[in-house]
Amino acid sequence: MSAEERDQDLVRLDAAALLRLYDTGEVSTTDVVRAHLDRIHATDERIGAFVRTLDAPALAHAADVDRRRTAGEHVGVLAGVPLGLKDILCTKGVETTCASRMLEGFRPPYDATVVERLRDADAVVLGKTNMDEFAMGSSTENSAFHPTRNPWDLARVPGGSSGGSTAAVASHQAPLAIGTDTGGSVRQPAALCGVVGMKPTYGLVSRYGLIAFASSLDQVGPIARTVPDAALLFSAVAGHDGNDATSIPEDAPDVLPGLDGGVDGLRVGVITEFMTGEGLEPDVRARVSEGVERLAALGAEIVEVSLPHASYGVSAYYLIAPSEASSNLSRYDGVRYGLRVDGPTTEEMMAATRGEGFGPEVKRRIMIGTYALSAGYYDAYYLQAQKVRTLILADLAAAYERCDVLVSPTAPTTAFALGEKVDDPLAMYLNDIYTVPSNLAGTPALSLPAGLDSAGLPVGLQLMAPALHESTLFRVAAALERDLAFDVAPPGLDDAMEVTS
Amino acid sequence: MSLSEAQVRHVARLARLALTDEEIDGLGAQLDDILSYAEKVGQVATVDVAPTSHPYPLANVAHVDEARPSLPREDALANAPRVEGNRFHVPRIVGEEQ
Image 1: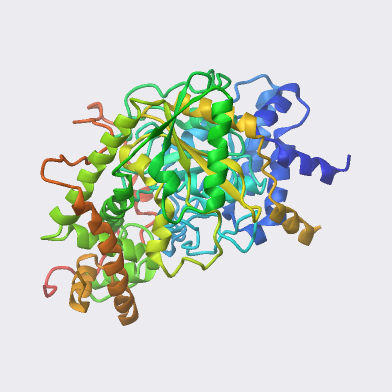
Image 2: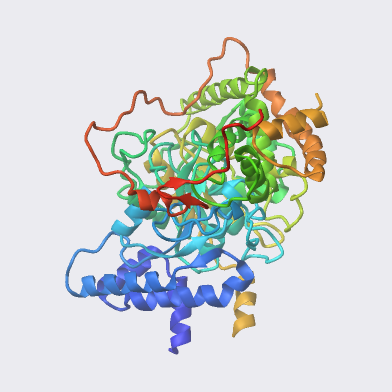
């Protein structure tokens, strides 16, 4: 086997397979990390998944893992597994931009808790991945630096806002990546890129060092090509953190032992409103229905459930998230970090800085949020939206009396063309229709590939579970994944390789 | 409902966002669209429904009361666009017209 062929094989392995190979000593972490960095450098001019790679620190970490493993010293649970990190998590001394001009050159003075835990696990961070600016968007086109392309069709978006992370995993640049999900930003791009993406229960993964978008909704989640890999990454980063006041003060569910448990006897609820809605592509509905049939064939009991207030979820979300964002993003004032555009007075300096530093979508959301919170409107918008949140929680509680997990499409469509929705914010927001209820309720949800549409693009199937029921969520997903045997092999990937070879 | 140009400028001022005339024009129509859609929440959010501000009920979370080192001053200042001495530098505030 040539070195090139061997590298091609190494980048196709999932994290679990890499860990098995490391155990037997068949490959070194250095070889694996180098193969993935080579892959990134060969393909990323066309994919655009990364905003910056960290070759030297990644190779140094790899060499250290190899040394410790050879010496019989301690290595972490993800020792030597390459990973892409969304550029929204603070990395000490390493530029962290949120894909915004506002934070170009910002080198955080501390590491996010998630970053610390990844280092403790000895996952090797290959680089920082692209995203919609400040995580606001569903296509990654709002990055201030460059768009990311969908590896299945380079003319299409990868979804967003964690589109860099999902495109990296789909194009075999990394077996694992970290994303964040405020209204679907892990699950929707996972669906559009044909990979697995999961949003944990709110409070299970620390938000310390996560650059805030909407604090009552933001949650860090794992992205992988298999459900067991996603479960492994979830386990490495979840757990209580005293530095996050909203962190749940108990141990995270242990999701790994039950992964092979199957679905026999479990009740799966199909959400009526999410299988009939306007805008749902027939192919998406067909693949999700087939997924439900497979779950039934595997022994699950299928029940129909209704979430009568779910259709108000997007409305509530686009009041709550911008309101919280308008407050969170007030910190970008040209004083302590980030861009400054000079002005004669402090107020003019701040306005000029923010006018130049933020892109159109971020400005739009700050404007919505500022308006919704302004005098005379708070009761009509923000308060009403929070009441809808109560209604959706009640809908979900009623549904979970009749079933263990819920199933729906992740997004109403497969990947759309670059530029297609960029001038129609409301159409873009409706991508989130099936994902926002889990954020509003703080409950866990996962997207896994359910097959392809007639154009050869991946379809995402979403599973949802009650708060802290991650074990059931991963168990059902793993069973369905084994049955569907979806191959994450985007044809656009080979086109990208041909150009360079 | 519809947002006037003056309202858009007022909100931009509250948000400390310097916007161009083109941006003001575009935002007026877009905010109308988005807020009209968002207003749907009013159809079901009746007075008897309690608001939920947070998905997981936690109250009065406090750090253990023990002294810990804080961020060194040079680290806190390292990313500042302008520093004077040991301080963040900003344009004159006192005497500004309000």
